[in-house]
Length: 359
Image (cartoon, rainbow, N blue to C red):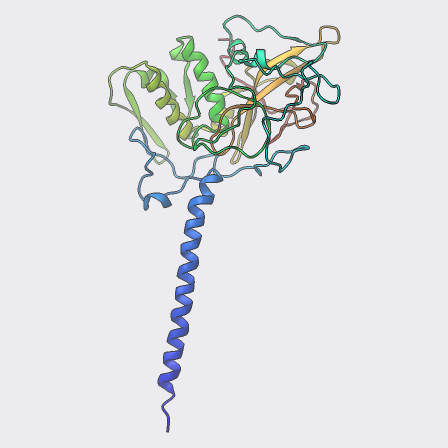
């Protein structure tokens, strides 16, 4: 009589081994995919560090793994006529006489090096002159990269969506930190730093901790454990720009749209001015900042320009108006109940202003 029990057991063992091997292979592929896909979606993981601290983390603070407001977000593709299409920033709408190919006014001065120089006001409009030395004047005179520049992510990759009319010439850093709320924080902080108003540079973490630059400047650093943060004296006094940028990176890591919405004040769209921020605080959340305005002196109609960063961290850029086909970046101040931008839709009651905006 043949002993078949041993054969059955052996056969079953082989099937189990193959199944286990297949599962292990699937797990390996899943891990490899996660290491590539999650960071591109704006999600930080520890997969690349073997469960330890990421190589790009420094010792000034203990970084959270899933950054508030920045782990997820809306679909990256823009709304409007170019939705889902790769950008072509070198497309030239003008024909050399200030008009586009279909005869409409071409509002881009390709030789301009600042927001005010690059983007012409619409026909019949004049720029609203900001107060000398104000935040609005600073924003209008932000330097721009040459016309046709691409929006690049922090790691050098080109953003595939063509949603911008111009790119602000300001570093984005080498970490996935300077996203939407961080861009607003960066611009406000850069303005105050340029004026030497160091005691006005302070931003709240999502936990509520007030990160004051004047403390950082005196050599204190922020130690974070869970939701608790405290100042620790570590360095000598340093008001240099390199130290200032390190301070901002720490703020970027722990602040977001939620914290920004708590420390800014709501304002009426009828009183819109440069420096105001359309902001939806949340997880996810988003925000854009008004960088310039123009007005028709005959009708009183006003228009404005907005800038943003997004996920993952990327160059701050001037947004096109998705309701127009010619790359026009101007938005009407009487936009109604909702403001539709390429990456987000805001409601009229989501307009905020810094509490010390008159600085």
